[in-house]
Length: 512
Image (tube, rainbow, N blue to C red; front, top):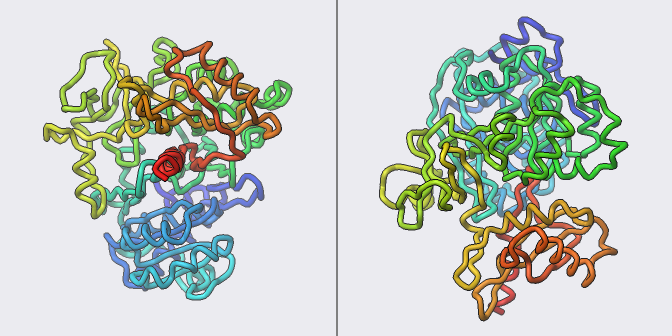
C-alpha cells in the first residue's frame, strides 16, 4: 500500500521507467532514497504540516521527492518547469516553502529566485549545483535508508495552471494518517480501473500537474510500474504501450488528436492489445475525436471531470459515453447543479455555471477573495471550477466551455470550444484557439488563432478554407470571422491552453 511495503515484497521490481533513457528506479531504490530524503527533512527542522517546493522536468527522482515529502507528513508543491523568475518566486513564497529542490537543467531560473525567496532555508539541486544550492545526492547520502520514526501522510499543495489569472494554491487539510492507510483516490481508482501489482501505467504528461502526480503515486500504492515519458511524442507513446505491455494510461484530448494525425501505417504498426484502460480528462474531448479513438483502441476510454480543488468527481465509462455521446458522465463524488448568473438552478439542457454540492470543501491559500468567488451567489456552500455546461434528463453532465472564455457578440453567448473542436480536426491545423476580440459594433467578434501544420500554408487562402470548413459544421455566428496564424500557441504541457494570454494581447492592442 506504499513504497516500503512494496519494496519489502518485490525489491527489484521497477517502480519507475523513464521512456527515453530507459533508466529504471526499483521499488527498493524508491523506498530507500525517499527515506533518506525524509530524514534530511527532519534534520532540517521540518515537521508535519511544513511545506517544500520542487521544480523539475520529468526527472527520474521526481516521484522519489514526492514520496519523501508525503511520508514525512509535509505539504509538497510541484511547480511547472516552464515558469519564469517572477512566477516561480511567487509560488515558492506563497506556499511558504522551507525547502526548494530543482535540477541542473533548470539551474538558471532556479538560482534566479534566491534573493526573492528569503523563507527558503535549504536549496537542493539534482545533477549538479548552482550558487546557493547544495548537491541533492551528497546531502541525502549522509542519511539512513530506514523510515523516520514519526512517519505519516502528507498532501500535495498544487497550484492551478493560471490559464485565467494568477495561479491559486489549493491547500487541503492534512490527515497525518498512517502511511499504509488508503485514501479516497486510491479507493476510487481501485474501483473504476482495477489496477493490480501486475499493472503498468503510462504517464505521458508533466508530473507537476495534479492528475499525473496523483495517479502515478496511487499506482505505486498498488505495486504497479509507472512508465514516465520525458515529453509527449505520439508515435513513441504507441511504441511504449507495445514495449512495456502497458495496461493503464492517462491522456488529454490534444494527445488523441496528435495520435490520430499520424499516418495510418504508423498507427497500425504497434501492438496495443495489453491496453485495457485509457483514462482522459483536463479538457473537453471533441465527440468525433473520441469516436475515432474508440474505433481504433476499442471501448477502453474512460473519462472524468474534476479539478485540483477536489470538490467533485464526474465519470463516464465507455458504454455510458457511447449511449450519451459528448458527456463527461455523472457525479460519483458531489452533486452537480447548473446555475444562472444570479445563482438560480436551471432545468435540464439549459446552460449555466457548473457547481458541486455535498462534496469536499476547498480554499485557495491566502486568498479569501478567490475562495469566495468560487462559491455560489446564494451562500449555500456550493463551489465551482469556473466551467460552463448543462445536464440532461438523466443527470449526465456536458461541458461547454470556461466561463472566462465565453464570447458575447451582439448580446449572444458563444462558447469557443465548439469552433475549436471543429477546427482541431482540419488536416492543416496543428493547434487552434478561438477567442473573442474587440468589435466596435458587436462588442466582441470570434477570432481563431491557428498554428498550421506548415507555416507555408498560412495566408488568406487557408483562412478562407478554415472559415468555410467551420461554417459547414456549425451555425455561422459561432464561427470565426477572421483567422490569425502563429508558429506556436501558448499551451500548457498538460494540454490546457493559456487562452488568457492571447485574449489579453488582443484587448491590450485594441486599448492602445
